[in-house]
Length: 85
Image (tube, rainbow, N blue to C red):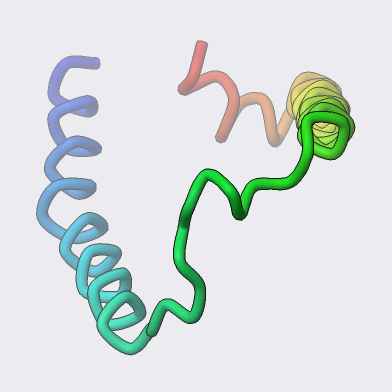
């Protein structure tokens, strides 16, 4: 298990991270900010509360159902979720 973990870390560090980093930098360099980010630009408290509540609810439902899906199908559990456990 130790060497398998080392392999996953090496793959992420040497392959995935550089590709992701290159993509992120290329997107950021082409993006221009059209708005100033000031405290006065924030929405009111009620809007922040309902948007945060909605996002938390969607995230919780998505996590719950995807987790249930990974435990329900033996193939998904064995090849994906078991690595997490």
